[in-house]
Image (cartoon, helix red, strand yellow):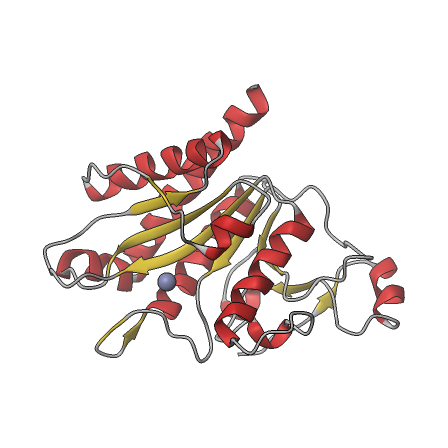
Length: 247
Ligand SMILES: [Zn+2]
């Protein structure tokens, strides 16, 4: 896939020539057949924040060497990315400033040249977190797919931080996805999750369904099903942001 890279601002262009790593890039979404432009924050230089007032940062979980959970040849990372792109398009159409942190099949650990750690996984998560703390979006959603030993386990699950904002965001997303799945799950505190612990913005992890459940798997792998999930995530986000604006 052709990945066209556009530097967002001229100011950044100037800064980039001195910076050790490229900063904010925008990838036109028509590179994968969509109308809206996808803003892809692969690496950001703190001195040159090229995008301000970000409403939503979408984290497409896993990527590259890290496939996430799997079922046969179905990999979680591909589902996360597909729904992330569709969610981006929905949010963009609603007029929300949205950034997607991964637009292809790669890990974010290689963008992380600043953390001295031998753990690729830790570097990957730290880079996603760093982006959130630099961009300061009103909401960070990290998209994932669940798996369980019991094939009967199904439905969406949203994990949140300790803060009231994150809890509210999780509630809105869970309600919206529950309606789609005909489920009754409740959000849970994701105490041990790196991203939730280290992101200084309202963040949630959205487990969009179980890859180990036949009905969930059908929805998660079908483009029309992915579109429905994206629409529900976008609706939940919109409800949360409207509530924030009203307060
Ligand atoms: Zn995952």
